[in-house]
Image (cartoon, rainbow, N blue to C red; front, side, top):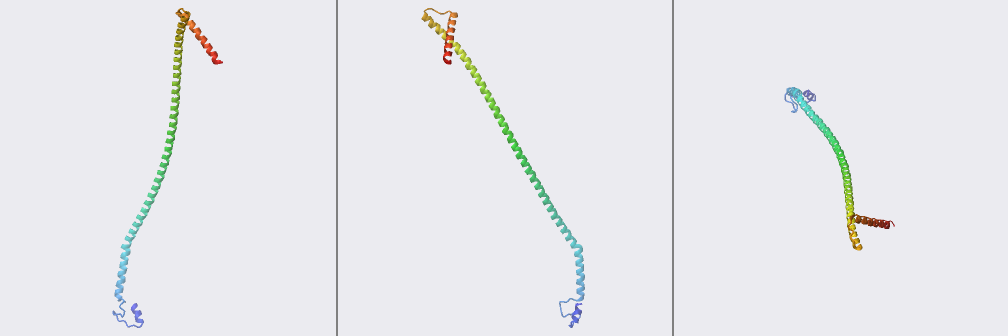
Length: 189
């Protein structure tokens, strides 16, 4: 066809020896087209399906990796939410334990104060009872001593012995009773 086009243009063409070396021979052109069709068919039947399969595998792997990454991200988000919830629970539990400890401490402190107060009252009561018993004993001893001294002194003044115990205790009791009356009259004025 090209040869005919060049011939129509007025150029002289010799069969098999064209003036233009770029133009192929008709036989080479037909063989080239046949080989191109064969190569195209082989590539279309063998190479392209393999490339398509590899492309599909790669796309699936990429999508799988993306899905895995999304799942991992979702799991990480869920783990983070769970961690935050556990942390919040731990804080609440810690606050509750601190409050319980504070209440128990206050209760123990109140109990210790009550025990200390009761112990203080018991010691004070015991001390007062001991003081009262010692005062009563000292008063009795003083009465006996004052009575003995008074009878000795009265016996020296009178010049006779007042050793009679009944008489002696009566005189001493009267003397002390008069003394107490005089003291109570002086303090009430």
